[in-house]
Image (cartoon, rainbow, N blue to C red; front, side):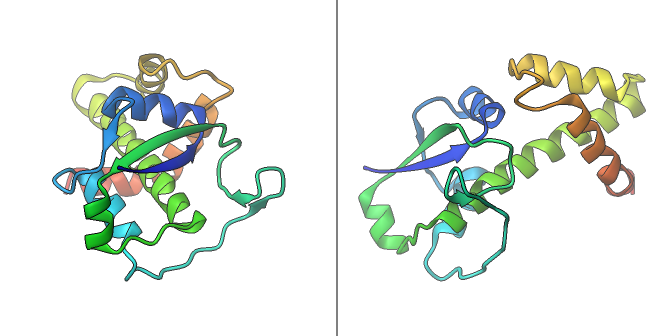
Length: 160
């Protein structure tokens, strides 16, 4: 079994462990598994630039990557797919997971407001409480600002 350690922020680790457990085994029949496999495949050479955190010596977009989430995959699958693992690809996986989780949250907030007249703030605080995420790990204000930037486009796509 091959183990890949993803360096993730605390809040993302809490969400991943809740959703997938501590013993996540990569399978291509799930959306997360497919996404990770596609990023790790050796034929994918896309490169993105991010700020460099001198303390962590790795690429980052988050305040602190203090936790790790382990992904396990069989050696056979790794050989068959020809995986290429580097910091940039691991960071892409973390960004993709974070973006997907936030997008789901924002869509839920929009639907809650539209159909049940539940305020956005209530949905965000319920989400943070559900995963026991503290204000230091992920602040309500950062969620609100990110949501406000994306709200118009998400609403348009949801109610076409």
